[in-house]
Amino acid sequence: MEKKYKLNDHVIMKKGHPCGSNEWMITRTGVDIKLKCINCGREIMMDRLEFEKKLKKIMGDKNETK
Image (cartoon, rainbow, N blue to C red; front, side, top):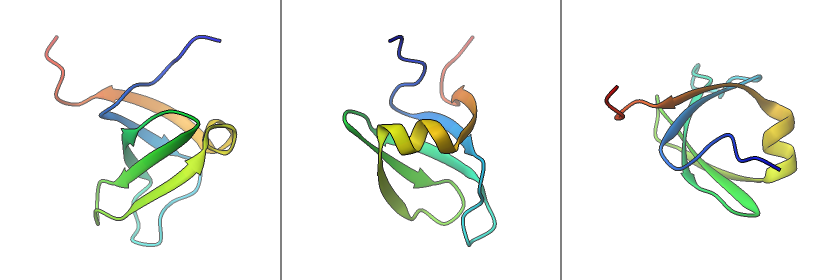
């Protein structure tokens, strides 16, 4: 299985966070994925299968120069 995301990638989830944002940054990968809300800074963890179901779009690394 090919990995489509990596640390510091910004992703958009299908369901928004209660703060109003649905954009997150990946801060840890492995069996579990740790996400940090871009708007309020809250961090959550979810298992990889749940993450892949709820993922809408991968924005990529915002700090990456092209």
